[in-house]
Length: 423
Image (spheres, rainbow, N blue to C red):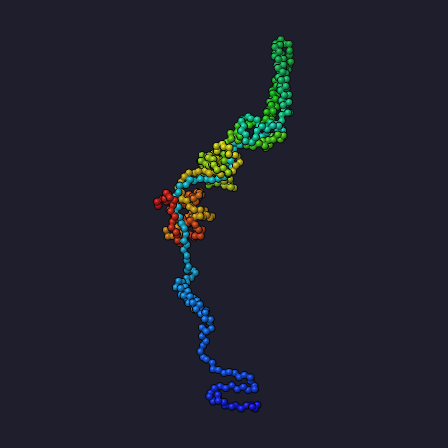
């Protein structure tokens, strides 16, 4: 074999079969083959055990797409400016309900005649207190006593001076009578008689002066005894033994005349015009279950320009539970009437006043001004503005506009036994 081997024709070439020659320049010769023109089958690339699952998933996806298209047909799009939704609202036909109109207010229990009692004499030290708060006292009963150790001797001295002045006046009067008896005989001059007359008059006047001084001292002595000017119940006591009582100072005692009590409160201006003297009233105290009945005794003649409130007083029967100063709630009954009653959510208010929305025959919202009379457990009592036959929007009326078209639910019937009036 030489360096450049010659190409020899073998038996394989003569038959047309390919023959690979290995030369010195290449260890291996490429194997040539004719590529096939058929595509690779996708099934040969998947494991045989996953092929049924894939087919099922594809089938389910196709079925779901068909069902979605059938159940959700395409709707034509409406421009936003042309879209309009009609709200669905709840309405109520209130009818007429028998209600008792009342006016409620707050206040406090007070003594009808609360009399302060203090020292109206000289300044002195209290040496005795004989009553306590809550005691019932009679007229003239001793409440307290002020030290009289100075006034008593003064009074006795004036009593003695009065006796002396009376004796001197009697002597002067006797001498004047004797002088008148000898005047005709001329035993005494006219001047002596006139002097005795003047002396008698002066001594008589001196008696009156001493009597007045004695009366003053006795009055001062009397005022050292603080007594009850009326019969009643002692409400407060601020007097203590050893205390200095000054005239015109704070009251030492407060006495309720006869134990009579009443409720004093403040009533709104608009309610004051509806209440009359003699109207029945009910008063309740905090912590007590029972109500105390009474009547309106007095209505204030003026209204406070700042608070727009007026005074009202309710007379009450005496009861140990009615202690002056206790907080109380009063209710005055104005009378019974047939009124529409609507839920509290139906009544709105603004700067123009209270109002509700009613639905007219064309199913459109209509604003109706109303006047509220009172509130109760059933709702708001309407005094004017409704006759009970209207369809009143019961909830969410604040989201409606005047004239807006609405859909309504079935109207609620009025309470049993109360029918709306015939229109």
